[in-house]
Length: 135
Image 1: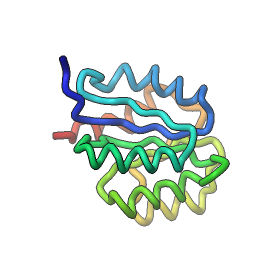
Image 2: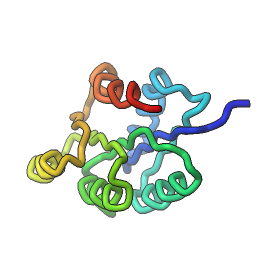
Image 3: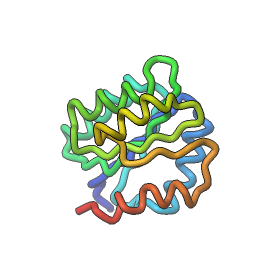
């Protein structure tokens, strides 16, 4: 039996996007030791991120959509970073407000930004450096 040491968290209000991310991440993330978590509700994601951290599961990175009904991706990333400043965040969006994305990047809160629709290789190029730096 394998021990789950890591997690990757994806947050998007579109279940289809989460499904696509799941297919793609399964190709590059070692699922023997990494839990892949998917959330359509940003508030639920925040709670679960806290739980994972409490359970001593290292979150490798979080992929966040910008345009969501209850909370923008920028708000979610700021809330995550306020509690867990070392977590790596990637934004994946087709409707992001450039002002807010620029502010996240200037505040060093965002590892990278990927536009929807995205190419699998663009996603891999964004997360590969993060994966290479895990313990």
